[in-house]
Length: 433
Image (cartoon, rainbow, N blue to C red):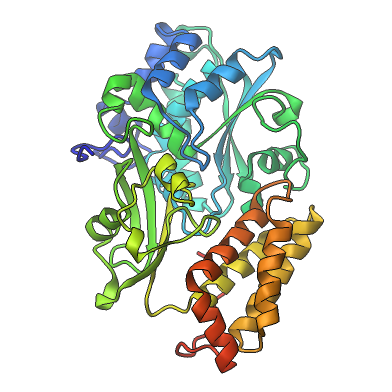
């Protein structure tokens, strides 16, 4: 693995983040000028395919392939949406990019919109991100003044009007189809499948290109520096860097840009400064609570989509949550179970009832009122509801519980045997930050 000697996404600006002149000094909008004056949409797609960039929103789908599908869809009315509706527990990298790199996001959105030949283009922003949204609007106003956005961009005859859409959805609104539903004035509920992807049936029923903030912030740098530059770090199948949101039991929580393929141990020790108080690591959620945990003997796993999938977990949007040995895993699991219960949109009966019943059984066991039958019922319920929802929320809730019981069954059984939590008393915090 190549050490990161310069940032691939994050750039140091000599001025406030919304200052267009500071962004121009580091090569800002040069890639967009190139797209307007030299590169065809097909050439942009080919460069992205050559770079091997994979989506940073969770699935890790090849970005160039997705763009190609929208550009060459048989239906010629297309739309573009940037998904900045981040609600994943332990994930805050898109928020950081919105706050610190609004012009870079705007440039990425312009390139994406033009390449997809979009009729209209939107940036869907979490309503809680007030400062970030204001930074974005200030940057967008400056970009319009300089002729990078709006009518007849740079005298090319190209018209693109980026609109900021304030999203009032919940965790489930981060799912692409639920987000698109809410943008059309309907409840933020995932669509029944098929059709499966917004690239076929998206906004207003038309092919829609949807990318998250981090993916789009990579685009200007790739087109400005070249695909070969991008592939100098990372792994063969997962080139480039990832913005890791590191939280939980670490001395220095925060957002860290590191090469794909960095180990979990390196991320925690080098970036996070290790675990506070000299305590030991009990578990790590490498991709947030919707993916299986890994234990202390797996800290040398590589942080990339394929390695973690092979290990039975996932990278997701890289919300890395570290749990130390002073933490009750039953209590920790209950905390996230309550989150999933509260965030279910209620559309699918297995999800609506499943998340409630999972949380209820977890509450009973954590309180010392559970039985062996309750533990058996908990696992049985996971098997019943896993994979049954229109989106992955109930599957994530099931994977969380299954992973916790598989790795820390002795803690669940200790709660049942003692009729209490064996860890020091503490209020159950049901708020997930």
